[in-house]
Image 1 (tube, rainbow, N blue to C red):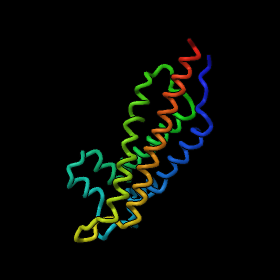
Image 2: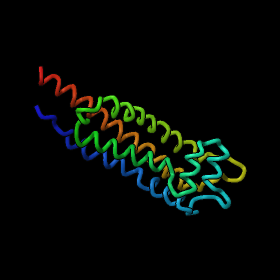
Image 3: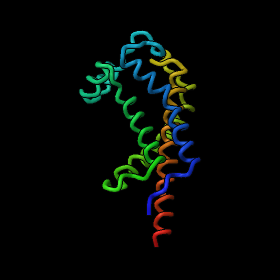
Length: 167
């Protein structure tokens, strides 16, 4: 029996939720390329990564125009859309795609917490970011997490349905 596509609502909801990440991906890519909008004067992301003991490879990527969080966001959206559009590749164990998708659903509470806490940031110097940046990040986290949750749950539902029709 040929596997069926996810329901139309899932195929529509996943890209819409994932689209919430576009401003975040664009902003982080802009910053990695040297842009300054939304950053406090003198703040440098690569320097901040180095101060926080990020792996040297991530600092190097940031200094060369590639933000790893933007790359991860793109991977999350692509994974969600792939899961919503078609079943996982038969030669790959399902958990290789579904485990990161289910783990990515933790972005939902992280995004909600970011949205709740950001307005109350009371750092003395006002922080390294302007207020609208936190909103873009919160929307991206919730959007990617929601896209992954919907896509992963539709895979589970379609697998259960496929198993019940096969028996």
